[in-house]
Length: 205
Image (cartoon, rainbow, N blue to C red; front, side, top):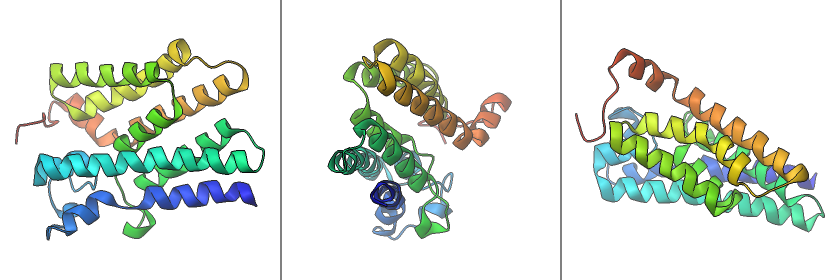
């Protein structure tokens, strides 16, 4: 039963709708503006950098603290901290993407996944994923494409830069593949627009 605390608690942490609540504090229902997504990118586009960066921090912090809680609970019951962390990470991302407080409609999970990656992987893996995101973004100015390719780069970075062996390696590589798959699935509409040439570049209406 104690293991169930991890997915339940971390799903609820992920479900905290930061973007929705920040926008509501300014009298805006973010679900009715821009892409209608509650994530940091849409908040930034609709409300400006100050609010967008705040939401990015809050969503990232959810992922980071959830992983640490998963590790703490697993350690307390004598279990694998890596397993606890991965269960927490998946639950938190799912909580953000399908928040119970908004009819199971949430964001795309990229900021929350960033917090998870910081907590779960070595600095080398984090730097590699961030570099991919930055290069793709500054070349094309597509947030969606940068996020997708950074997610795809994550398993590759884990293989070459993760620094883990044995069971921990396989647990983390499996998670990184699942995280990449979730990111791609959440960006299906963006992928269609990218292929059709109708995806919006950042900074342009």
